[in-house]
Amino acid sequence: MRHHAQVNAFTNKNIARLSLPNFLQTIIVRARIVQLATSTPMLPHGLLLAFVVQWQDLEHALSSSHQHENPSKVIDSALDPAKPSYSTTRPTLFRERHGWCPYSERVWLTLEHFNVHYDTVKIDNTGPGSRPSYFSGQTPQMRWADGKTQGESMDLVREIYKTYGAADEGGDESKLVWEKSEMFRRIFPSKSRPSSRAAFLFGWNGEPLWKTEFERVLSQTDELLGDNGPFFCRASFSPADICWAPFLERYAAQLPCLHDDLNPRDPVRYPNLNKWFEAMETTIPAYACRVKGNASSWRKVLTMAGYGNNGVPPVVSERMNDLKILEGRPQTEKERVRDQALWDEYRSSRPYLARTPSAEAGSVLVKNRNAIVMDTLKQCTRSNSNSKSILTDEKQLDEAMRALSTILVYGADEDGMYDELNIASKEAYNVDGVLDLAAFLDERMCVPRDMGAMSADAIKRVATAK
Ligand SMILES: N[C@@H](CCC(=O)N[C@@H](CS)C(=O)NCC(=O)O)C(=O)O
Image (cartoon, rainbow, N blue to C red):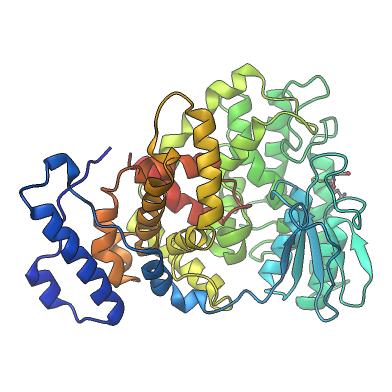
């Protein structure tokens, strides 16, 4: 962990080089005060201060996105159980609130892919009594603008394609799409226990299905994809990909934990699957930027017992830790540019999003800072009852939160999007507790529930800098 360092970036030369918008002036004045304080010989070395920007500075930097409201209404019915007044001009999606339900993911992805204006009601599926009184049945469901409701994920996908997409209902291409979607039910294991967090993984005895069964599924899927993909229906992304995506995505993260040498992304054994994952993650903006989960979240939900998931057999937990470090490695420039291009496309019709995936993670922290501070204090006080941690001190935690938000909003040195935070961001790494906080949030977050995978990865990379 880095220690407090003297603020040395604010030399007169640096300041003179910069033009001085109001916001930057504020930062520099504050920095100069800190610089004076830190160069005073009276201060013992251990008390040198690192410079932390204020919440209003971060809000200012994010103002281009914060001035836009997301026009869609999102209600979390677990926190707000009153019956909503439904829009009569746009549809409402009822989806499972943690982002665990793969069937909800299908419908959410389709709506996002077509950039439909829709409202959302999040539903807690975790047990009797947890749902709002006005909702019954399974997730997902849609309430259309005319008041009719409809369930069954693939029926909903079909309806959304008909209404908002360029559907070729009845044509040969369309037949192929629905045949390939239908194959999902035939290929995925028929004798597994139903569970949204561990879909098609465990038998009724609580043990993982046999390795050979998973290998059969992967080989048949690879064959169905064929080598003229990368998608299920050749070069075009279609409802068939939407049908399979939530399950293949979970398999890619979870199967390597269940059996040795079982990797759905293996380019030699499953070349078509490997290309399909790559295409989904690098060419479908709504999927890559918002709807897709990340591997560490899918591993995390595997460890939660209950609701159809029996808890993890011991051998599984051993395999889980190895992948962590690999996932937090710094991005290559090529990866950063590729992600930014996807983000720009996704954001082009969503001006309420920050300019980079990393800044969006910062924006989520800035907007939800009070709730995050309260949750962190509660969790860290509980788990550190004997040791004193910075994350259990409200004032220090607030400072670490501002520092982490600064790092995220400024992002990588090279992205050049929020230049006014550049210097502050470098100093922010020196603030006590900032890396601990990143590690805590990385552990606590669930993707896609709390933010998209690209944004969450930015926090993971700061956590891994520890
Ligand atoms: N065939 C349905 C399956 C939906 C489903 O199984 N949803 C689960 C969550 S992943 C659910 O609502 N479970 C709670 C329940 O059945 O009461 C679809 O495709 O939409």
